[in-house]
Amino acid sequence: MICPHPIVFTVFYLILILLGGCAGAPQNPQLAHQCEQDLHSAFQELDQANAKGFGGTVSWTKAATLLSSAKVQQQFDKFPNCINKIKRARFYIKESQKA
Image (spheres, rainbow, N blue to C red):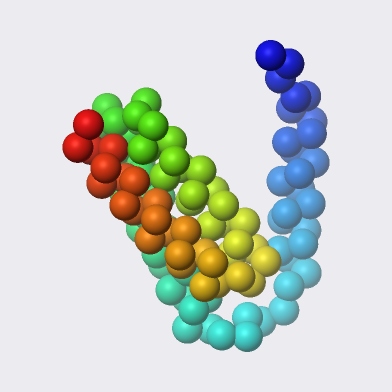
């Protein structure tokens, strides 16, 4: 399998940061705040699950992917999508700890 060059990832993240920095005030500040707070909490839960040794499970990986996607949704002011992905990720975090 060919691994993409690390520069590609760096450029991708720089573009995301630049686009996020150009955004104005969110249209719905309550959803923006909920997305931000839930995202922070969910990443902490994911880190705790990883610290407990559940980092290699399929459910943990699904949760990590959903949280990364939620972060992208947040950057593009798609707060309902962000919140939905966080809820789904939390389900997988709990599932990962059952394994």
